Image (tube, rainbow, N blue to C red; front, side, top):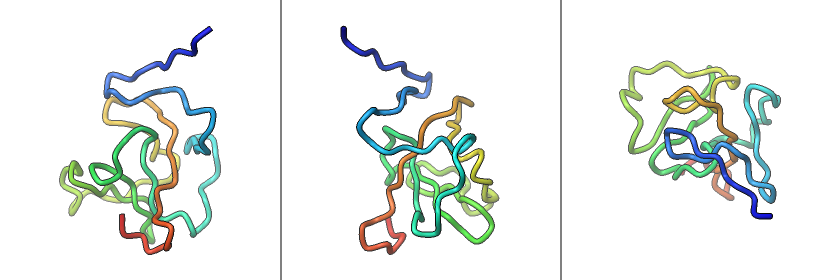
Length: 101
């Protein structure tokens, strides 16, 4: 039997990968300070990602609309796409811990 991957109207998969560590922000506790950048699983972090700031998680990337005036979000809402579906997120913090994606 072949496993099927459900896809969201935003074109990202809804099922988390079986072989990669993921977080579900509405269910899982906020990661420690070593995690500085996360992205929805299946999304290119250069295009859209969430970066930790002092007051929450801020949207960044080439597709971030009005990021200069959009307030940071709490961890619990980080996994939702623009279509309102919840997705797993992955840690995409660079190996050197710099926070520069």
